[in-house]
Length: 269
Image (cartoon, rainbow, N blue to C red):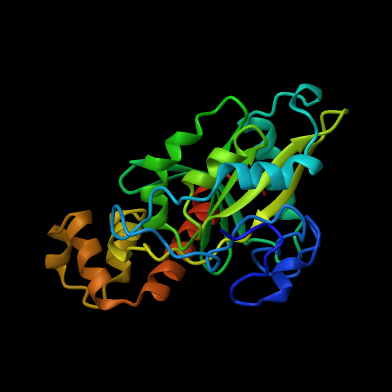
């Protein structure tokens, strides 16, 4: 088993440098200490559901806990970290990054409402952030994550120290992870543990179900009136057949941004 001191399998030295917010790229570097295993550190398990998504990923909880113990304050000295307090700090952090998102959306419904993304940062494509506070149930990501994995190219889990070991064991290795802690003054701090990489389970047709029918029609190259008779599922299938995955991801981001600009989406900007 690879230890916390082991060098990343791909030899990328940049993954072992940087501080929590010393970030220069779009997704963020991982600090040298308390590093979680990266997607390249071990092979994905054979059991996969659905559409190729690996659930769960067998990372040792003890390895994660031991790596973080010297750096995380005792739970008894920390204020209760709720979704609300973590969300406010996360949104503030996203707005303050060097690569600032074009918009930060909240409560984005995906896959016909089967899952709701807590926070979505709109860059060139959409990046989903799922928040699990101290009193939340981390095991819910087993269901939610299957939809996020297909609807977003990148997903990051934001959680607290009492959940981090379980979260690392359940979340796929391509998910990013951020640890939320609070100090004596109840100030919430965020620290990157692992950088998000592209989801191998991204599904064009599922991702397109995030869009409205009018938006799907706008993506059709043939504007035959017969298309207006199709439902969203059929339109999603048609658009997926004629567009590359990257193009689909970027067009979805554009439509979500347009909703924000035109309709006053509930955003934090």
